[in-house]
Each structure stands twice: as structure tokens, then as C-alpha cells.
Image (cartoon, rainbow, N blue to C red; front, top):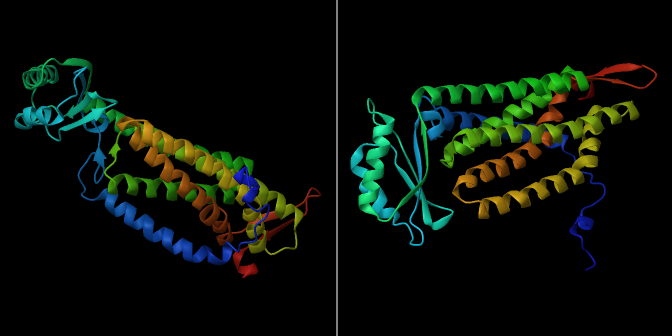
Length: 323
């Protein structure tokens, strides 16, 4: 019981030299961004390119069925629908063994309502008794609008974050924060593409949450950095950044670890509908923490910031002057 709670094991103050490794991690981040863009944009086939487009963005139908108290024979359901030219058919258990979720696309030129009726009849012939719990149909026009609005929401969130940081600190801080946000979002798109996680409105919500979390972590670092720039006016800028990150590191680790524990539970017990959301947010928290340390703060060395105290004295510190 000596080291309980475990938070007491973490040092109060660390002394890592983060900035000395920033160039190496910067190169790593650039490579990962290029790789993520490659797997996300290839093949160049709209609307979702290299990502596994969900029903929300490519149009189609979602059916939720129940055969309670018997378990659903997923194999029979899939075999019954394979001959219907319904595009990428997905049949998976959902919640309990007696429930399943079926996703399919409406054939070109066919009526969505008639296709749904035909699919229900096929399923009823394959397994009986069966109860259709939920039916959601998304048309192509609606799916295009949802995709456009989802991408606009991501872009708008990043733009508003830039404006917020600009007014709270200064433009250089805002550009550093936005660079970190783009880093996090692009790498997360890469994960979605590689892991074949369905890209739908839930994934967009996860990305927006990641943007908020990453910005919150970055603001904490920037706030302490601004205080230290005023407090240590003669300390080299690189050392001020190292000092700031070390001062906020324990708080960052504790906050991230708490969120990760909750998301692991959500991934394990949340079922298939929440699994993608959990994995995306888990990854986003990790890269968001990383970008706050190795992207947002060190990138300020490229163009410098103003240093001043309460009396109004100011000095511009640049990477060239401190190198």
C-alpha cells in the first residue's frame, strides 16, 4: 500500500530535454503524415477514397434484426443476401447473440423501399421467426450532404481553434496549435484507413472530440509557457520550452491515462457500434498528447515569440538568435 494511489509514483518534476529531440520527432511526424495521406487518398475513388465509407456517406440501409430467444445464424443471413447485388454487405452480431445488424447498399436505379422489402422477405425465408427492430435508409443525396457537412465541421473547428488561440495568446501560438491539430487529424485518418474502421458520422464526432482534447492539452502547455517567458526573461527560449513541458508533463500523463481507461472500457463493453469510436479516440488522445509536446511548443522555435513582463518590456526571441 506504500505506492497507492499510483499517482504518487510519478515524479513531481521531470528534467527531460524535449527540444533536443524535436527535430528527429519532427521528421518522424512528416513521414507519418505523408504515409497517412497516401493510404487515405488512395485509391482516388470518391466519396471516401481509401477509407471504408459508412452508410452515412455512401448511402444505403441499416437493418437491425432480433431472433430472441434463439441466436442469429449470421451465416444463413449473409448467404441469403449474397445473390442480391447489394454492394458491400455487412452482417454482424449486435449487442446479444439474438441480435444482428445488416448493412447494404441499394442497387443503382432501384427503389430503396422496395429493396428493403425484398431484403426483409429474403431474411424471413432464411431464418424464422425474425423481428425487424430498426430500419434506417440513407439516400445518395443525403449521404453527399452529410459528408460535406462533416468535413466542413472539421475544418470549421480547426479554424475556430486558430482564432481562439490567436486572441488568447498571439498568432505564433495559434499557428503552432493548428499545426498540431492538422497532425492529429491526418494521422487519425491514416489509422481509419489502415484499420478499415468505418468512416461515418460517429467517426467525425470522434475526430471533433480529438480536436477539442488536443487543443485543451496544448492550451495548458501554452499558458504555462507564457508565464515562464515572463518569469525567466534571460533564459534561452529552448530551455524555457523544456522547463514548461516538464512542469506540465505529470498533469498531461494523468489526464490522458484517465481518459484512456474509460475508452478501453468503452471499446471492450460498448459493442460493435462504439468500437470504432473508442479506437479512434484512444489513438487521438495518444497522438494529441504527443503533438502538444513535440509539435505545438517546439514549432514556435521556427518564428519566435514575444517575451515581456507586467511592466511592458518585450523582446523577440527567435530560433536563430538562440541556436
